[in-house]
Image 1 (cartoon, one colour):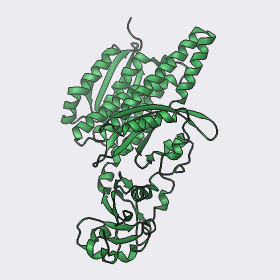
Image 2 (spheres, rainbow, N blue to C red):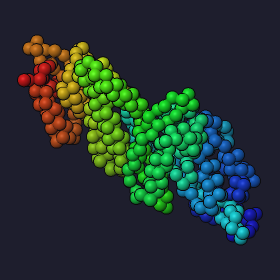
Image 3 (tube, rainbow, N blue to C red):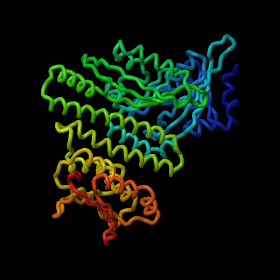
Image 4 (tube, one colour):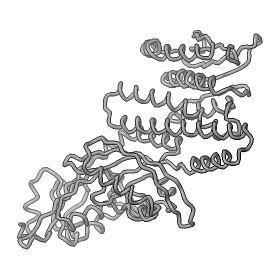
Length: 473
C-alpha cells in the first residue's frame, strides 16, 4: 500500500514508462517524467485536478462514440477492484497554445487497494499508438467505404464493462442521434424487442467462454421510439485481449426490407395472384438474399484482412474482396429494379468503376458505355472482367494525366466490344496479370462466348473482350 502521496513524484520520477496515479476520486496525485513528456504537461499542470478536467475531451469530437470511454473504464476498476486493459481509443491532448493534438492510446488501469481492501489509487499506463493507427488509416478508410457500400454498420463490444463502440450508422439504426446513446450498450439493449433480447443476451453470455476468433450470428428486432420495428442481422467475432478478456467486433445489417419482401411474397402466394408477379417477387428476394450473403463474406474477409501484416497477403485479400464485390453489385441492382432478370449495364458499370476508383480520387476513369440491358448470367462475368482489368490499370502510375477509359459498344458485325484503355503495365504487373488475372479474365470471357486480347498502343495498354450480346443456344 502506498502511504505517502506527497512522495509520488519521487517514486515515479525514474520510471522509464509513462505512469499516472489517481486516487479513488480520480484526482491526479502523481506522474512519471515519461508520462509528462508524452502528454506535454508538468506536475503543476495536473496534480490535484480530476483527470477528466486536466485532460478534457476534444469539443470538436462531441457526439462521437469515442467520448466517455475512459471514464467507463476507470469506474469499472473502482467498482470491481480488477484491472482493465482498454482497446485503442482516441483521446486528444489539449495544446498549451490552444486546440487539440490528435492522439490514440491503449490505456491499462490497475487498482491499488488499501489495508481495508478499498481501492485507494489507480495506476494508469497509457501506451501511445498514434503512429500505428495513422499508418492503418488507409485500410480503415477502405473498410468504411466497403461497409458503406454494403449497407453494413460496424461495432465493438466489451461485455465485461458494457463498453459499446460503433459507427454512426449503428446509432442511426437504433434511432439515436450520433453519440446520443452514450459509451455503453445498455440504451441499445433497451430498444431491442423484449421477445428477442433474452436470446441475444444468451449468445453474448456463451461467447464469454469461447476461444479467440469464434464467430457468432444472431438476429433481432429493434423498436424505435416512433414504434417502428426494424429487423437486424448481426455477425461478430471474439477477440481476446493479451490478458484473456473478451472483446467482440462485428457488423450489423438492416434486413427490414427482406422481411417486408417475405411478407409480400407470402401474401402473393396465399392470394394465388398472377404467376409472373410471384416469380418476379421471388427472383427479387433471391437476388437480395444472395447479395446479403456475399456482403457478409466481404465483411468477414475485411475483418480478417485487418489482422494481416504481410503486404502480399493483404493485397491478395483485397483482390478477393474486390471480386466478390463486383458480383454483389449485380445482385444489388437486380433486387432494386422492377425487372429481376436484366441489368442496366451502363448504369451498373459506371457505379462499379466509381467504387473501384473511389480510393484514388486523383485517378480519372472515363466510362463510355452504350445504353443496353444485359441478363444476369452475362452481367456477372462482365463485371468480374471490368473489376480485374480496371484494378490492374489503377495500380500503374498515371502518365501525362491521361484517364483510364472503360468502354462497351456495339460493333457492325453485331458483337459487343468491352475495352479498358490504361497505362502500359510494368514487367512486375504483367507477370501478376499472366499468373492469375489473365486466367480469370479468360475464364469469364469464355462464359459469355467471348475472346480476350491485349493490344499495345501509343496510349498504353488496351485490353479488349469481343463477345455476342446474346448467349449461344
